[in-house]
Length: 157
Image 1 (cartoon, rainbow, N blue to C red):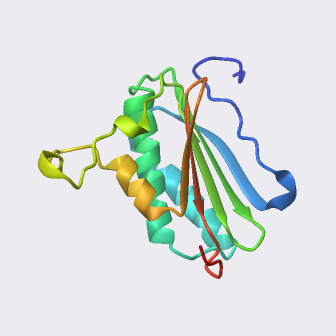
Image 2 (image 1 turned 30 degrees about the vertical axis):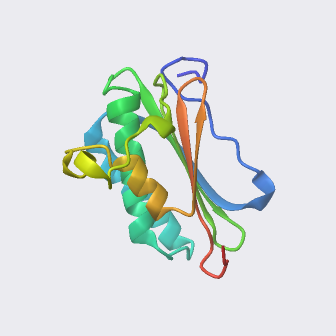
């Protein structure tokens, strides 16, 4: 497999000097693989003493992966999701999920806490991720990337 293939998101680029540990893997667009991928990231975090707010990180990662597979790649078995996770010096957590989809406008997602949206079956994933993580960014071009950060427990924001 070559990263130039349009069905495989490009590798993640991290500031290598500030990372203690990292993971970079490709996941086929199969929702049944999300649980295992999330478990690998959580295990990596636990093994490296990065155990703050893991339930929040776990849920945010699960939502991001499912969104990438279901909405970004539309379950296309030819497409992959790239999952990157890193632990920064001091215990910060950085997670990137990239898909090969067309992208979307995050500002157009209806607020799931208002009006009729409260009763909708879906539409809460991005909102949840933004509530659970300290920083969330989206990047577009050759697919969509969501960059999620959890600050170290002793950092005040």
